[in-house]
Image 1 (cartoon, rainbow, N blue to C red):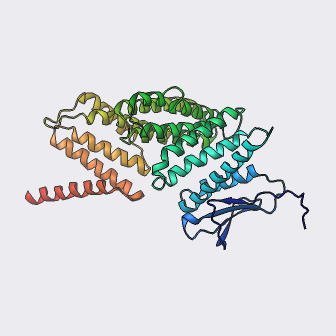
Image 2: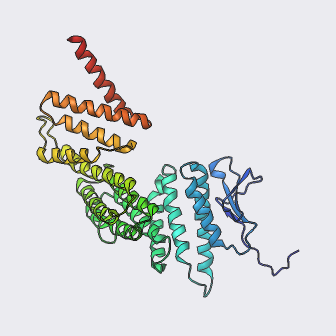
Image 3: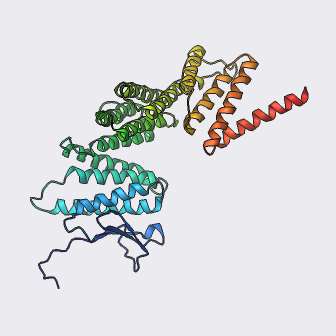
Length: 384
């Protein structure tokens, strides 16, 4: 029996104060024997506990990181379980911070703690966007604060350093999209905001030119930025800034990776992202089309942008790249004055969408385009 002076390491990471009477199952979190006990019949009654039976040297920080990493691994396959783990991470982080703040002459909390805490806050807003809608901004701002604290505490060589900068950039982008003040958005997009944070993250990732995983992460950040520019949540001017920034990052990354022998996957992805940027530039002009006359401002420039984007996707294989190419071909068809040239481009779009369809599901509006085109063609033939 342990003596009264024996220190007991906290065992619980509770998602809420209510305890559960019976655990329903266990899942291994680490090879060292850390396990999570989940007893949630409903998401709101989730209890998350971490036990480490095999590693006597494990500390709270290691356990906290194990839970957080497990949550990230479950985000796509089991969002409910990921949500429970993230909520547990946040509650335990808050407890650890309060214990630290109440102590006297305590050591400063390490950068890793603030990185985990801030990242968990941001991740939970993505998994449970509907549930947290009314608190979305509050969560984002607290996540931003914690990651800023991580940034301030970093020595610079931490393996998660790029993730801290990337997290700050992503949060700033989300705040950018939620804000109606265009002047404030300019500040968020520029110095000290989204783009400068993403710059730093990509600079770190680009240092190791032979790290395929780092290359993928860098391109994912560019893709995320283009996705926001394409989301219609921003003004055309702010979206244009994001697109131009993305193009500059692609120039930098492509120059650094050009000498790699095995860079075919990255080369295709860069072409896809470049084509997407060109298409977004063209889309801004297309949206200014006169509804009565059908006139498009700078039509020659729009055609140049779309043709350049289409050529970049000549060898497209992925579903997303094929869908983009098909949409570009429709745009090109819409701009043709010659009926035959228009029909040829629409036929190319149909063929492209069918290739994408063979790779997976095709969005309903593209399926409708195929049906309309083929049915119209059948009607024309029957009339002849």
